[in-house]
Image (cartoon, rainbow, N blue to C red; front, side, top):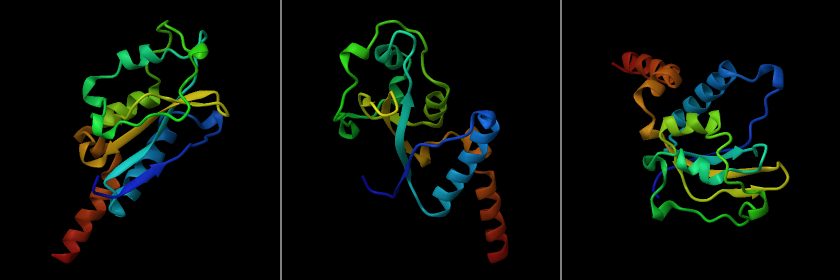
Length: 157
C-alpha cells in the first residue's frame, strides 16, 4: 500500500489513571503527531483478554461490522493462533471498549487473532486509515491540529 504507516504499541497506564480522559489525551497527541508528520495509517494490535471461560473469538467477530473487516488483500495470518483449548463458544464479553473505539474510528481488522502467551491475551491486527476517521471523532481528536493549520494558513495569507 502506498503511504506512510505509524505503528502503535502497547500503552501502560497506572490503574488509578485509566479512563476516558487519559485516552482522550493519548489519542489527541497521537493523531496530531501522525498528521503533523504526514502519516496515512496507524497500525498495531488490539489486545483482548480472556473471559471467565476463555476467548470467545467467534463472539467478538460476530459483533464486528462487515465494513470493519479488511479486504482479502490486507488480511494477515497469525504465526501463533489462539490455541483451541483456550477458545470458548460463549458470548461473555462482546467487544472490549478500546476495540469498539477503534472500530468507530473506521479501523479495519486484518485477520484472525494471534496468541500472546506473555500477556495472556489475543491480539487482533488493526489498520486505521487516517482519512477514514469519522468527522465527529476528527473534530474531537484533531482540534489542536486543525487550529494549528488555521493559524498557519492565516499567517501565510
